[in-house]
Image (cartoon, rainbow, N blue to C red; front, side):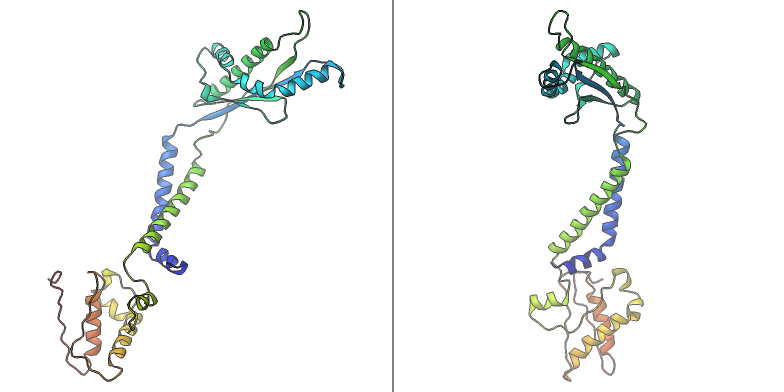
Length: 298
């Protein structure tokens, strides 16, 4: 199958392509309406080492190095069971671990906690509660070095979570666009696959390569609803094609006594062609048309 034949098949089956795109949009719209909305809110906590004089030999420098090494551990601590249990006690309800995530940019001392819930106000409350519980647990874990010594790290709430105005999911515009594209691609694949698997011959060149015969002419495709109407006889392309067929049959002056026209399947327009060729050859001679299709003849 060539690219040209594929484009020809898509043009001939354009309604299937359009139907596929519309079906994809409808499915995506249905999914967008069925999926519950989810809202996300983020609270941020800033963590720093103890105050001191900066320098390679100072405690401040050592604490900063310890803080850098513990960034990954703090991200895990933020979503630990101990922190989430404390957040649940603050809220008076259980916090689902799957609804909470730590958001920490690489190399940053700002730790974010993102909560996702069906209610935007609930999402903001969960994020704030987890952040506050994290700060409390962090102070307990990073105990002072001595009875009166300062803690190894300090934390402060940088930004409280705010209820989101728009839902993170579903995204109707994105879903509709993706549905249209996927439906379009699926329809194109169906049309091309149908063309590849079709047993019919789609061009004169293919017919000659398969049969090794001679083509008397090529007729345009006539929709089945127009084959019994006078519009076929008025189509200049169809009339010219029939004349070419007649010319090839009589080019050597032969007058065939019997001319058989056959087709591999029903509904391919054989009767229409027989009627047109008989009418074209009836000029100056007597022509008898016999319908030998005993299975579908009335």
